[in-house]
Image (tube, rainbow, N blue to C red; front, side):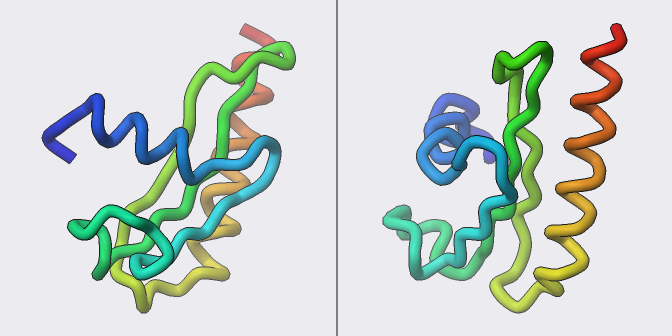
Length: 84
């Protein structure tokens, strides 16, 4: 997390337009992420991607709750940016 450029590339690599993405440690090629999971969703404003929202946590996290939270927060931010 301390290397912003590397983390940004990881987020780009493991995200997919329009949906919540779940990547479990062993599925990712970065060795330092082997014990973690990454849940992400892209953020949009007027159809253009403006960022990503993500949670890094243990591989045994409650995926249903995290996925719902990411999806809800991303949708709220998308709506906020649309009306900004």
